[in-house]
Image (tube, rainbow, N blue to C red):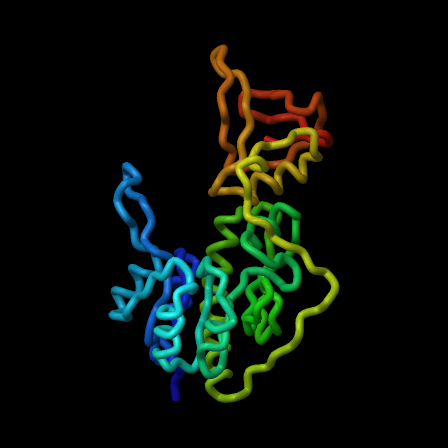
Length: 281
């Protein structure tokens, strides 16, 4: 047997799940993705999302509504007569009419161990907080923000030196396998659903430009976590004098060192810098 699936996703993170579901023999009746955005070398050409491009290669029709406020867009979704919708980093809030627009609802692949790090930036926030582990979860969506019951979980260890980019790739592949397993269980009628815990709720707010600047008054471990949590994008940075001019330096990798000094002081040519406690370079 196989399911009639509507897939909803936008970035590279979503592509392996789309591919895995198609390879598992499910019928992907439609793909929803964010509308094309300006890009290219000059930022003028409209660029289709990675999911949009992948769907076209697979020969799946792609829809790119900017929202679901239009009744016609909501009806189109229902008319696909899907068994289930699979959502992975789609980027739009779904109204209840869409959440209930398939026979078995919408299932989301979320990159955290819910209820910790609900929201937009769970990968970055987990590393910035120094979490020793995180994971992927498949949850049945409801009208809350990542509040629905959890079906399956895959725990992933977070190495002390791992960057957000490295964790992104590991979770991306784990999520594809986990969602494929979830849909197999759903198709067989044996997918478990467990309500999320009421304790331990944290929200992973979108990363703002204001918080990308490195604060060397913090302990070196916190500075290190901040740097790797923002690497490779958008990147943490600080300002220092180079050649008589104040220059912005983006930092994508760091290491801890013993020692001390006035926080923010550059202590060596390899940019070892004193922090509130310890050194980071």
